[in-house]
Length: 224
Image 1 (cartoon, rainbow, N blue to C red):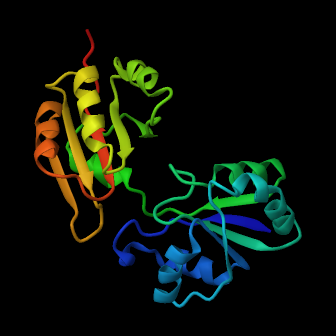
Image 2 (cartoon, rainbow, N blue to C red; image 1 turned 90 degrees about the vertical axis):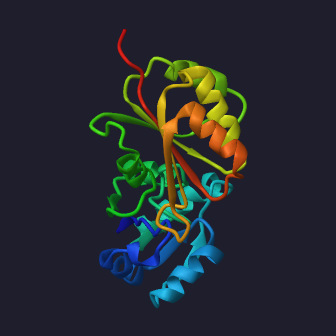
């Protein structure tokens, strides 16, 4: 009995590992964030394992039942729509519950968006903090204030609908001359990385409509 956490491609299907394909073929059940999205991946790699939905809207209700299934001898793989489950995606609750019930959990290495974005940014990557998605409303200002004196490189995920607002807030909070990088559509056909100061990046996306999924990397603050 084991839970496998399996990363899936964030763009190009060839980013899938041989091991990930084999695990998905061999387990008894695949838990997918969206079975309709994952169906394309399954078809491409000829994976016929049964799938079941497991997402942020139902994971609280189903996690105990899934733990019982695994304890009864089923091997289960958890995937998200793209990237590594539990990294700004569902998965943490199930992993924690499995570990609390002495069920083995094995996370395979694989695709995640923030690593290539960090490397492509050219900003220091020896020490960094991953913030994922900022709170949309409540707690957003507080979180930014907490990060105002952060000296490590900071990494954020953002949707195209809030990129302009987020860059403007970063400019106000961190300073217009702070260096940053914005990557979009990583590993996809229209992959692009724009580098510059926060002021320059804000200006760029005010003139060009943001499209795709974004990773924003911001230089850490300097010691006084």
